[in-house]
Figure 1 (cartoon, rainbow, N blue to C red):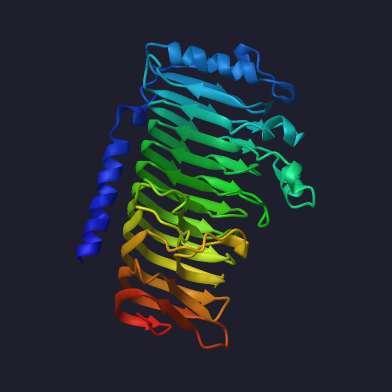
Figure 2 (cartoon, helix red, strand yellow):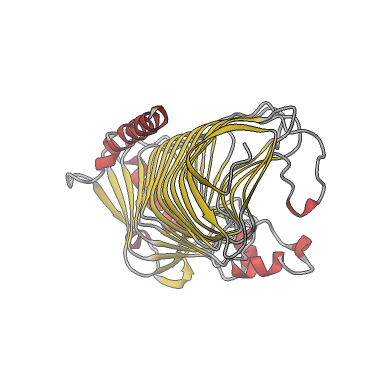
Length: 401
């Protein structure tokens, strides 16, 4: 009951911060000044570069002393990398997108940029609707080829950095070169009704990545991608995710952590009502085996369905993908107070629950409550090393805590 009360209070706190900020009603009273990108010279033929027109529309909206709306009518708009910077004269700017924003089919045009659409130091920005088509499949093919070293890193499709009071609603992100959406150094962010779509083998195409941010809520979002559906990095505090669908993908992951010695912790993370289908992982916490002052504390996974998930529940303190250049040390990340409640469904492997922690920093406060995972005709198993916790209710596979 204590955990559930804390869980509810966290949600209320996040929603009060996000929904009751004035920007939540941006343009609702009809007083907003509308800036149509067509008026700034944008062309909706997917051939003519409309980058400058979008930047000019942003400059006008940012300079407006009253709330502003940037309107993108139906059509396909060819765009290069853009940075929308803050210090605006108002804190209510809405991007209302009815069309599709497309990147160049030549992945090298966008591939050298960090971000395709980057918002930096903004406050009160809302994005409603629209589709982002980054045309990333050609870059994925390059990365998966024998000439991968010659490929650019690729761009994140949509990023918010050092920003606050952000809303993204009803957006579709297609075929990002790298991450689809990144929330970095932000406060009071609401993402809802978003769809992320990329191939199951597309490399490094995390759906939503959150780091160094607090009071972030993600609702009613469907993610199909080739990497983590949601990845949660250092410095994430008060993150609420609810009604999330992940298929295909690598699951929802806290980490990887311990990339650096000096690293902020992750705390107060809740996932509620989620479905994983055919993913490589379900609920994962991962850290590299190297010294770090980072930590994970106060995590709740509630009401989750697994369908043929390879690793439904996993904590891995010796994370090293492909076993290449592994640090081979001991993870300094302290993991504690993690609740798994009402987790049910099917595992694609016999080991459905794996807690691989280390003796120097054992995982503590692990709680399994009403877990029911099966694996076809095989007997399911749990695997634990240096994990301390308790079980309540019916737990299958039998707990090794």
